[in-house]
Amino acid sequence: MTTELEKQQNGELYDAHDPIFKQYKDEANQFLMAYNQTPYDQAAKRRQLLEHSLGSIGKNVTVGTPFLCDFARNIHLGDKISINMNCSFMDSGEIWIDGETMIAPNVQIYTGTHPVPLSQRLNEQWDEHPEQHFVKTRSLPVHIKHGCWIGGGVIILPGVTIGEGTVIGAGSVVTKDIPDYVVAVGNPCHVLRKIKE
Image (cartoon, rainbow, N blue to C red; front, top):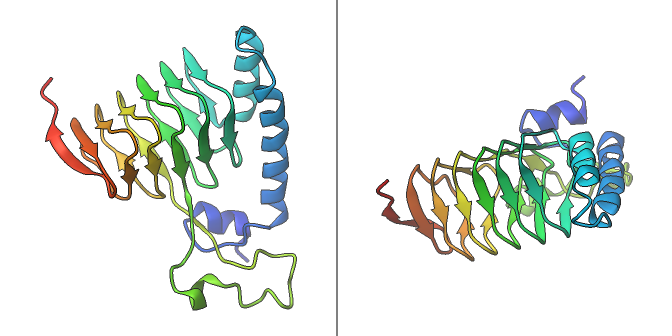
């Protein structure tokens, strides 16, 4: 029988209130309480907390506070990454951020999604199993490739890949994949122009 964790990892609908996910959230909350209360000048302690809790982390990475995430364990950061303050990474699915990327303040990255039709979104087993989530969830990975600049207040939706060297303008809502080496802006985010290196 397929576990809820296996369903989640395979991009299938799953119960987000399964005990394994509650455990992951508890662990992430412990990390966030410690990390967000650790002063900026205590770089070694902050680094230790990140290494212990994130899925993977490269060299020369800074993550500003306050910082929010769902599991922490599904966040993977390359080398030379700057994540500014007040970012929210809802990492029920994996979030990959490749090296030499800048993430401005107030960026939100979502990997969790739900079916659009109400009849498909609701958990038909909930009356018999109220410990489950009343809606069904699916997690889709997000990948920000090497050398990107994600502007302030950008929202990145589940399943999106942002191409290498691309700049996403402040306040954009990224609903679909964006190619390499472009400036993209708006809601929904669209390519404004190519970048000439």
